[in-house]
Image (cartoon, rainbow, N blue to C red; front, side, top):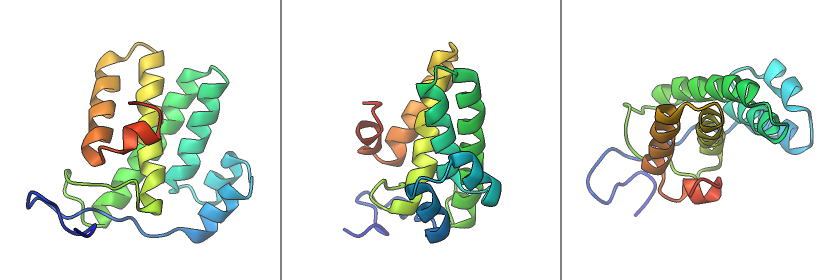
Length: 139
């Protein structure tokens, strides 16, 4: 089975386009705030900001950063043909920014007592790729 096939005949897996410059900047240690200043639509940069805010015990900032990354990712998923459901595989490297933002949004929502949002985001993450929650520490 390829990433474009779905075992149950559902929609094909969505694969976001590669962002080599932005990914390289983040991986080289450039501060996430500088990365999103240069590439404001780069979900992975927003996810990194959210994760950092969570480690600094600042869940409100984490929530805002993660929600931004999540929405920027939804825009890109739709442009890539996603229709609101279907696989978003963790194994496809460019998808990880969106999935990380979604996981950070779940953790931040839980931290501020937003239980329904936590549950919704956790379920969305598992529905996107059943392996993603474990990869991101949510399962």
